[in-house]
Length: 267
Image (cartoon, rainbow, N blue to C red):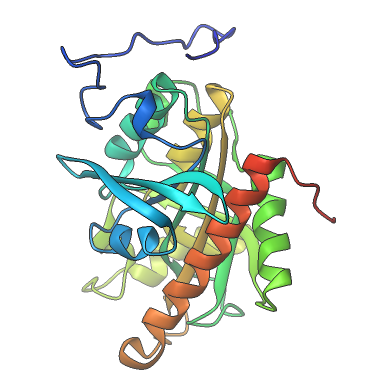
């Protein structure tokens, strides 16, 4: 069901008596060839609405899984909760049940003043400023999207006439320390990252990229930029947010279809 990892990071599935993996609560028959991930429990319902014949396969802990078809291609949608540890668990257990393609949809904050609130951002790579991946490998190992996932997202956005920004994102564990909700110190925290060209910040991307790469999986990410921490600009949530989330879900579903079908992309 899963290929042998040749780099010493293989792990043993933690199986329940019914054959499901311990945290996700599903087995290999309940997952598609690819999965769209989200941190938001409610958003997974919106993702599965893109599918035909979507069936809820499990709701265990923070992990809700739906599986159906998108344009005749079987795929899944899954909530993974906030932060790096539940993300790492999801990546590991998805591999245990034979699902090796994933695209995460969500939101992030910009620190590049040229990125506007409401822009759509596709990370090429991430700064590993979180703790989960340090348990796997030292900080010199890069956190990058695989090229197939990255270009499938760009191609899908282009086909839909949607402009996206790309660049490096910083993943960290202190959500409220670098957000519009911080009391003070945000500018001081983001300044060193701005100087080296980091565009945005989030709380999961680097973990997904790193663990997926180590385990020889494919992982991409697409975000709506809700706020710019440098300029103070915030998107109009009531007017624009839901539409932007729908856009990135549509892009992710089409990109996942391309990945599963093995369609070529233009560079």
